[in-house]
Image 1 (cartoon, rainbow, N blue to C red):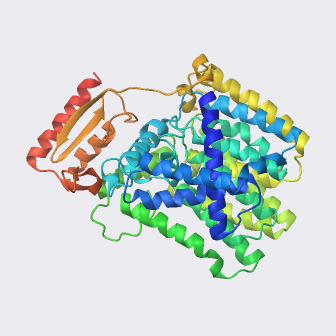
Image 2: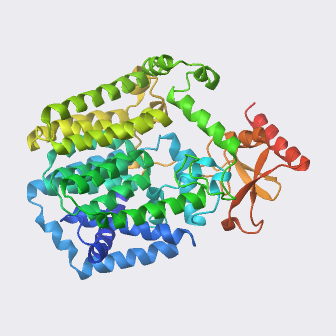
Length: 544
């Protein structure tokens, strides 16, 4: 907890300094400390993304970035902006920050933290963006911009990977600066994302900030659209954000397409990053085939697609069963899943209905545009993979739109206090959620409070793995464990080995002496099939 505080005290001035640099280049997103920080996050992430094509995001990148940010922070006396806070503002910021720091000090429990986030960060800090990395682990083909940002500060500034906790403190600063108190109602819920560098948290926070700025009449449509594209680039399921920013620019401010230029550059960089690591413009959709030699094997993509469909139904049906569903079965079974997921699905559809009715009643152009944007996103999600985690942000947005004018400071602080107590209690005593909501599987990985986290945030260590070799590819597999979060890279999760053998292929190095040159897949020779089968046998034996 104390170490996260030190990280935040260090990183926030660096980001403000970078924000000042960016404001000198492309203008002011919005006034205040939080405006500079968000501009800094956008600018430094784009720069690090470009750099990571060529070199790893290690200390040689982080240290100059820190020094440059701090130089502009002190040169422009940006610390004076903190004097704007009244005693009441400072007291509220202190309480919210302490709550965030405490929540962020718990053990990570989101499974993607171990199977996706940490392996991604290891590759970025040790090698940067690696061509065709999705060939050794399909999930690595995401390489979210948020993980590029986290990797850039993980060598020294934030070694415990709690950038999400720091972002929540930044969000608190925004709320207090803007006096838009309804945001306080969201903070306690978002505490559940503070222990891991999950991209879900920044896209929810950034989308709510963009939404607030659009509703408030922010006229800087160029930067609002650019930032909305940045949100999409962090997590493409947030497509409604750039759609709304575009509609706002065209139909509210009647701007021409020159205002979209910066956003288009960010979008182009996003496509280039995806093509480099995944082989297609948008992960995980195999659309826009450019004939790239390092794109993933079609059979592996097919297996992944089938898995996504099964995840839509919470793995309660086999893929073959789902294929036999009629249209009515698709809908009925999605609404009648066992456990909490069905309730979330029903609430999702009801929320969209309520928002649509609200838009028709109010007959305000802005509310209509928000509704259209969310409906477009929802239709796309329902078509590709209707997993509840892909539309969680919709609940926040609808609540914001419906109650934007209702929550004043007093009401918001009451809700913030009550919900903070509730969610901190869940994190501290997870037995409640494990007993009463067993279908919420994530809850089973919560471990509760430990005294040591008051000083240092809790982290896991495993350090058990077995080395293997198939063809020219030497790799490590975690021993008797499905995730490779602290396995030395190149690491491959056991499940992917089975997928590769099933497809008759295996990842290979483009240059056997240089991992940075990247990976492709190749059909296995008879000798390589024997090597791969030996790997599978060893994996099976470790689980006996």
